[in-house]
Image (cartoon, rainbow, N blue to C red; front, side, top):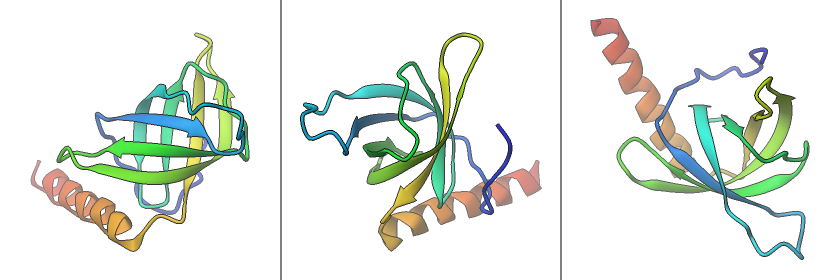
Length: 117
């Protein structure tokens, strides 16, 4: 997937549980996804379920310190992989400043750690 973000990407060993916010008839089925990277502007992930470009999904993002960030993600890119999975690029919709700051702090700590190694 071609880089489209202005913010630095960070990898986390985390999972998201999402549900489509555009489909009121949907019971909120939760889908497990593999987070590939996260920045203060969005999340990149791989999943088994085809999602819709432009759809907004509710997400619970478990971050590095086991806190959970509740967020809404809008799908902006999807690519199907050779193994029939989907690589998705999303942007945060209405992410509270406090949560964006938490992601920025992690980004800063990651930069410091990389400078030491």
